Image 1 (tube, chains in turn blue, yellow):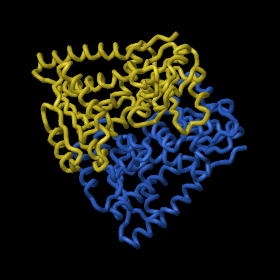
Image 2: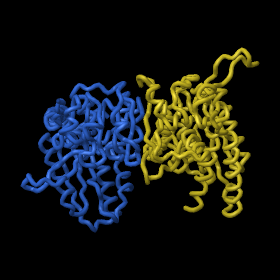
Image 3: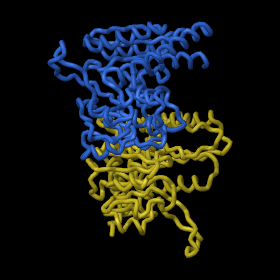
Image 4: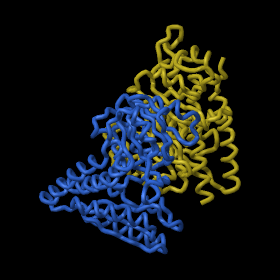
Length: 292
Length: 292
């Protein structure tokens, strides 16, 4: 049976470390890290995500500044806000909750986040630098960084190993592949157009699944001893659950945990790490301001 | 025996197409594509590269503006030139010949090239966007783009195939991997820290070698029918040659051509494509200016 990589516990440890560092930054430099959250429209899921992020900020002593704009906000209005936030001294990080309403140009808005405040790591410059050894990206995107941190904090070696990443989104698959590569893994990126995918997943020492297909990775698709990071969060029907459904990953946990040496559960694996990394990036942004 | 992918012939065809398109742009819009080349210091190899690029421009009717600065040029002086070139209407593309002398900050200089004039494709933004389906990078870097063009012009399918890239430099390996991925190949990136590399190269339908190790890929490291793109240019001793040396690729051509279905020679494979792609990017930069 695989060791369970407990993302909730690791994220709690990280949040505690951040809380300490935030207190130190305040005591020594009088600086409180600040995160501006920008939410446009009234999608309830997005509102929940932003609320959870602000709550997490507050728990570690990071100031958060919430901007909630109506769904009819114009591009101009939003760009003005972005400029204001870009200039503000007390705002070290800016988070634009995606997706934006369709009439707004997401790429233009994201490009308006100054690199040194891009704590979500969504700028293409950040992405471009991820794969580059020795040229540090200002910020790694939070979910991919969470995957790497789970490996590091579980003492799983990355260098010299074969990593297979399922999925090539700019949010998860591609950046996590580049980060594994920069850490000296040999990396294969698979996707919906990959034929005979099992023949590739079976070569993985480290398997990262981020394709959004419930329980896609079955026990026969991995080799014994693989380390599995499951980024998928899929809701499936479940009559035994009072809600009538439950969350599962892209990996068939029951089957694959029989083969793997270590595996993240869903929920409680990668999920809790994303917000922890957002807090970490915001702290780093503030620390960099202090040291100049 | 493999089909030889004749890069010199393909590059000649492309240059002829560009020459026609340049003439059309002049006739229809009165616009002559212009490339500024910036050479700092007196490295003879760099001077030769720049001279060849300017000669190639002239042959297809692209105007080139050569800036040759002394090795003692300051960062400030160079940045002023970059600003001037960035603003000039008749300069559609800017090429900074690398490497720059050690006292200059290459990354800062490259970042000063406006994206729409970055015909070398070396900006991290360009790199970041390469792997992103549906979000076009302004310009792909020339050598990786040359590799893809060789495949396309040889009617070699990329989508759904297994590509293995040896090397992860930001100049070649990484961008070519991202471009193959965006074209729906399943891509594995190998490098100096990859153990048992032959077991991976043998899975390749398309193999791109860009590691700078003479004849590293031997016949037993590929499967029958592989398509091989050899980016390596290595000088090795050769007593039978009047110069006492000759150029070879990263692939043992004699051995591997027995197994491959198609293969690029060295020289005369990828090499001639790099300048052809620089001309193509400069043309595109000028065309984009015309259409707004």
